[in-house]
Image (cartoon, rainbow, N blue to C red; front, side):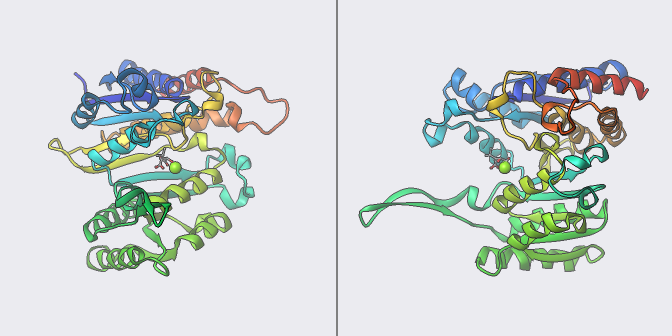
Length: 368
Ligand code: IPM
Ligand code: MG
């Protein structure tokens, strides 16, 4: 008896090696907790291009639409830099997000106590940090038309279009308010209403959704540039941040670095509920494919493992088991185990990707 289906898409660069550690965790839950998934695996990104001539084959897309959750590693690498835009590895990822309509991208930035000294900010500014960025993921300038490189008056012009409908803003605002209710009850919405019409509409719609249906949540608005500044000045002032696709891309990288390493940050991309009540969902680490360290058993698998923890929580309603996994990771970090991205103190030997995965499995054993 499996409790649900998972499609694993390891992708490129360090994707396959960090995903191998997630496999160990999935196996642990099957063996020790009788929580078994129907797991399948396929290619995405450059790996898919090499095998199928496209960064996401139609049959992989169909499979992704039919499972409860997709776990994705990372896409891209220098080998694919010269490819035509339409078949670049990133197009595979963007197609998954768009066709599954995963409009709400949850990017938590939590600072593990054992890692507070790795932040680029002072310890007291980040210790205990727990913010959630909700990034709109299926619209805005990433997808708006017209787009392209055109000829105009004898020179080329590059065009992208920022575009948001009321309903697109409405649904992501609701996702943010719903999350805030389960957290500290505060939402800060970020846009550039001072220079962009799409920002004016964004602010209006978020305010309207709030006033009509979420008056119990505290709502504030900030220009996205000021938001970036506040994130590095006093990050703990935030609970939930809701913002558009491009600002969310930038601000989530900033927030990630506050926590010490990009190697620690998971994400969940959620869409509308499917027939079985579970949301369409894809989970992926925020870090990229890190081609410089790929294949060396050096990468930090924690972001990818935490992404699986988010799958337990948001797709399978197994919050207690997600807590167990998060606690196991916290314990391994508290014991002083560090992958190379988390080294600071002289004399500390890094553990490898697979040693980190084994240590987390051992900490899970100890949790029983
Ligand atoms: C992210 C990444 C992607 C994005 C790239 C790989 C297309 O930076 O998930 O943040 O820009 O959305
Ligand atoms: Mg990004």
